[in-house]
Amino acid sequence: MTEVLSNPLPGAAHPLAFSVMRVPFFLEPHYDEKKNFIESNRERLIKKWGGEQGWDRQKRVHNLKGRGMDAGIPHFNLDRLASNTMASHRLIQHVGKRFGLRI
Picture 1 (spheres, rainbow, N blue to C red):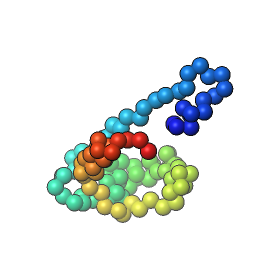
Picture 2: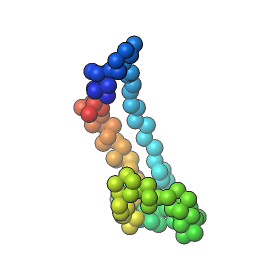
Picture 3: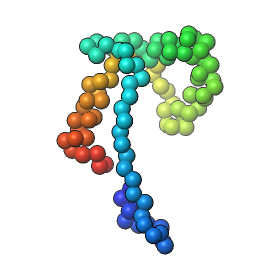
């Protein structure tokens, strides 16, 4: 953004300016906030997509492995435990308010 504002395109009438607004959401809002871990990501996704076949179909249709590789994620740990992320959202909000959101 700094580069765009300091070196606009030649002949541009006004440099482009924009803001990024963070809008948090919960993938699993029903998770108990008091429990450290609920289930593995594998269990969560299998349940979310209606069983093993549904999860396999989602992986295939959306090319999840290929998209992960393209994004530089060669291995996603599906056995990592998932939990309620309310505390993480609160931390990010606190840091943003305290230190600002500029990078």
